[in-house]
Structures are given as structure tokens and as C-alpha cells.
Image (cartoon, rainbow, N blue to C red; front, side):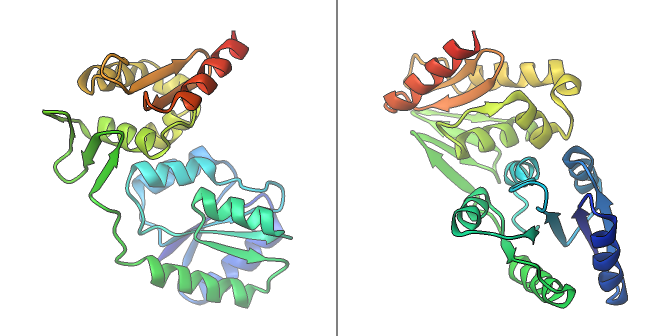
Length: 243
């Protein structure tokens, strides 16, 4: 078994890794999320631990990657800071599975890690997601809307799932590139733009039939349900500010 541990602290990494290794669990260390995501794409891991001492929620890219790749079997735990109620709520809302409050002992972290792994084993994300008249079926790799049902490639499916899951929220090019491709936006580049174009065409997301996949110039993209006028106006304001 292997866990991935994101931390800048040599001391904390030594303490945690030694404890896990004594229990027969390998510990791989990371100090940037993109390297962590690339590791998770190629290797199995039972748990991801984030040291949140220097950042309140440093796991956002990893959580988005987990969402669009349907990895609900991979728990994410946050440790290493004094949490107030607002910070705990924000972390849980972002998708963190376990939050260790205060300065916890290594034994407590180990116990909570075992609990998180056991809870997530065998868990399975739902096969379908319905938003604004669109139904994504990840098993069939299709999206149905109106009287149409279209097939998507694996990356188109991941991209659509993440955008629909976060309907109304701006997703930056960097966030999408990290989550779907495991690359930064510059490296994803042309492929990124082509997938957005194909998704918009396949799913009629140009606004004529109601919903749209809107480009917010220089910032990113947002899936806007036409009936959500407030969200649409917010996207327009964001685009105006960027200009």
C-alpha cells in the first residue's frame, strides 16, 4: 500500500513517513500539486494527505482531478493547522474527506488515515449526472439532452463532468488542464482548446438552445444554464474586468 503526502516540512514528512513505513505503507512526498497529479495518474495510492500549515486548502487541483476522473475511492485528508469552524466548512465543501484539527499526534493521524481508507474502499461515484436538462452517463460515455444522445471521448467526458459538476462557477484554464490532462495550461494548450470547441459543438452549448459553455476571456470557462441569469451576468462582469 502507498500514500501520497504533500508537505514542505522535512520534519513532518520524516515523522509521518516513518510511522507509515513501520506499518508496511510506503509514503511518497510531493511539494507541488501538478507532480502529485501526474503521480496519481500513473500509480495506485490509498490516500492523499495534505499538510495545510502554510495554505488553508492547498488541495484544490487534486480535488478537481479526482472529481473528473471519478476517483471517489481515493480519500483526501488535511492536517497541520489550527482550524476554525469556517476553515473546516470550506475544506469539507471543497471535497476533503478528513480534517485533523489542531496539532495532532502521529498516532491520531495514522488512525484517521486508516479510517479514511476503509471508508472510501469500495465507494463508487454515481454513473449519472443531470444538470440543466443534460444527463451525463459515464458508463455509456454519452450525454443526452432534448431528443439527442451523443458519444464523448474519455477526456471530453471528464471535461464535461467537471464543468457540469461546477455549473455556474468559473473554471480557469489552469484548473481544467491540471484536472483533465495532468499538465499546466501551456502544455495542454492546443488540445485543451480543441476539446472545449468539440464539447461546445457536440452538446449545442452555444447558447441558442438555452445553456452554454461560456468563455471568459483570459480567465477560463463557465457552464451557464440560461435560466440562471445571475450566474450569466456574473460571468459577463468577470469578462469585463479581465478586459
